[in-house]
Image (spheres, rainbow, N blue to C red):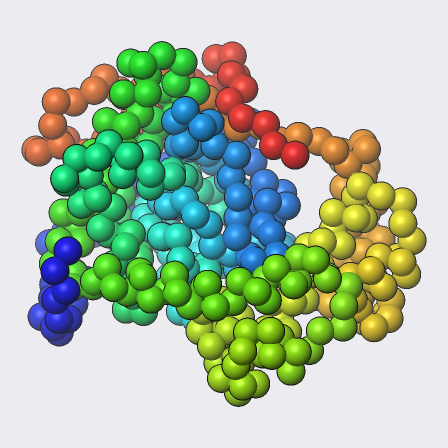
Length: 391
């Protein structure tokens, strides 16, 4: 893709959309049956490694998943990134979308799109729990086709620089169309036949085409993506060290030495790349590791705090409570009681088919919220099909 220069005109254009009347401002709340939802923290947090990378267990034959997540605001998933691309539709509630060091308002009916190089998380801002419809997909599913235009579908995810407008407002009508296609993908999962896999890829391309059109005027460049990837590569030796030496008393001086930088440059570089200071990132990682030990072992608190690199048990308890919202002992009691041995294996489920396929998105009527809710409510009357398990 040719490199182009940003202009204020192109930026202002992407943020504007046709005015609508007050009655049309939101698509309306999408009601997702509780049995279809998984707790955001419990599903995502255990899959984040020392590098802050979330790893999702895709079906290798068709690496796409659609799931519903709830977030009650009591504890948030830490900043993370992932090799796959992510599209989020906020069904209910209000939130802030933290992307690197930016905080973007995320309202009911909005869409958020996130590429593979940016650390991010969603933080609940409403008194009621959030419900999020999430689409995860590996970009190689599109790239592997080998066509000269295959990569063009992915351009919105490759142009995400520090000014990129990640949130697509509900008022544009695009989020509701994307949600409809997400539900169609979900109805085909797991794809057990060539026809099913073709349907999934077709619906995914329709979603990507909507986003390509939305961001056509945005003047980001692929060089931005490549620079972000190089920045992440510079931190890889440190992430490997943390994964192998979680209990070590590592400080900024040693971390900067591992990365071959001065302390001042390292601190600003790490914050820019991950969205967190190094010590805050380290505490989040250690607490996440301790949560696994609390639920899956009988080790005493003193041993866990020592193995996780905290100077004493009291400081461990203080940091844990600040990040998780409860004491380590309360966390162990709660999740051991809920999960028995602590080894519950969450499942991603498939939903019954929804609307018939449309020949084109051009001029397609937007789905009404009531119709979406009827299809989601049908989950109560259908057998749940297991798609993916993860440990």
